Every structure is written in C-alpha cells, then in structure tokens.
Length: 115
Image (cartoon, rainbow, N blue to C red):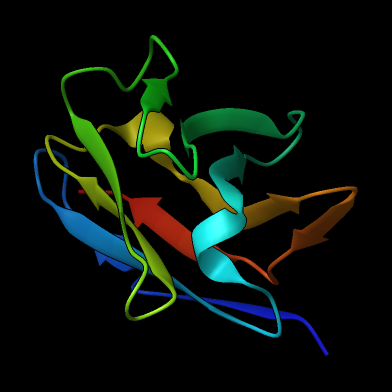
C-alpha cells in the first residue's frame, strides 16, 4: 500500500520559514519523480516545485529564490524549505509521486501565512 504523508505545515508570520516533509512508503522512492503542489481556497491546484529521480529541480516562478525542494532517498522523504513566506503562499500543500505509470497523492498539510 502506497502512502505519502506530509508534515510540517502550520501558522507562520509573513517573512517566516517552514519546512515541509513528505514521507513515502510502498514505492521505490529513489525511482520516483516527486512534486509539491498547493491549492489555495477558491483556486486551482498548482505545481510549486519538482525534483526528478536524477535530482534535477524546477520551481514555479512565484517561489523561485524562496523555496528549495530536496530529497533524501535513504529516508524515502522529500522536503520543501520555504523561506520569506508571503500571505499568498497560504494553501494546502500536497506531495505527489510519479513512478513508472502510477501517480500518488498525499493528504495535504495546511500552511497559513498571517500576521
């Protein structure tokens, strides 16, 4: 059974930082291409950052220079370090795994940026 479990969300002030984690089980993590998505209230889910099984990364323009995606294959875990958080970063953040022909979603973790 495949599970993706996000953690690390919470309430933070503008300019603050959070680090999200996505712990994977039931898949060969090192082969998976991993992504972080987010969905704000009333908006469509959007791709935030991706990290391929090769380690190459990509970011949405809105988070470039502020967010860093990484992975630890030994721990079957992906991370999203979020710095200089803005009000508009408020959303539910989802972990997504693509491996061979299968896709999997986590349950999401809430990030709220508010003063």
